[in-house]
Length: 201
Image (spheres, rainbow, N blue to C red):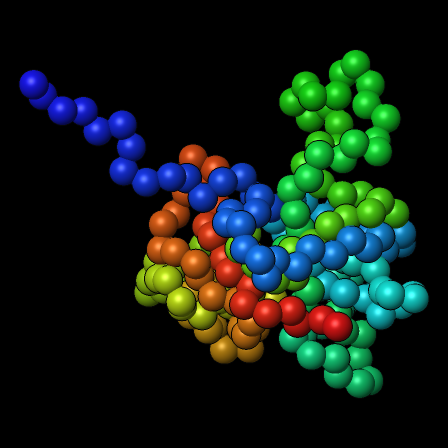
C-alpha cells in the first residue's frame, strides 16, 4: 500500500509566539512609552527606556528613527535604549472590541500602541519576523549569531532586519540571542530565535 507524507516539519509559528515551552522563560510587562509614535508589532525587537520607575518599552525601529542609539548595554552621554527582547503575541482581553474588530485592518489585534501594556519575551524561545538575507549571508543555523540592523546598506535592507552575519557598524549583535533552528517558516514569514539570558535587570 502506498504511503503518504503528511508533513516533514512544523511551522515555527506566528510572529511573537512563544515557540517552545521552557522552565527558564522570562516574560515581562511594561507600558509602551506614551510619547512614542510607533506601535510595537508582535515579534518586534523592543528596547527598554529608563525614563520612569521600572522603565517603558519602545519599538526598536521607531526608537532608532527618532534619533536613539540601539545598544546591548547602557552608555552615558547619548540617547540610548537597551535591547530587552521581542514583543509577545497575546490576546489583548482588556481592550473594548467593537463589532468590526477582527475584520482585516479593523483594529489593533497584532500590536501594542503607545500607552498600552506590552509583554516582551526577555528569555526563552520566540518566533520573530524580519529575517533577511544580506549579500552572501547564509541562512540561519542552530546556535548561530543574530545581528540586528540599525542602518540600511543598499537595496533590500531595512532597519530592523535580522541577519546572520555582521555588516560593520550597520548591525549590532544580539549577544544574548542565537538562532534556534535553521528552518524558515515561509507560511508565517518567521524564524525561531532563542534568548539565552536576560539582557535587562
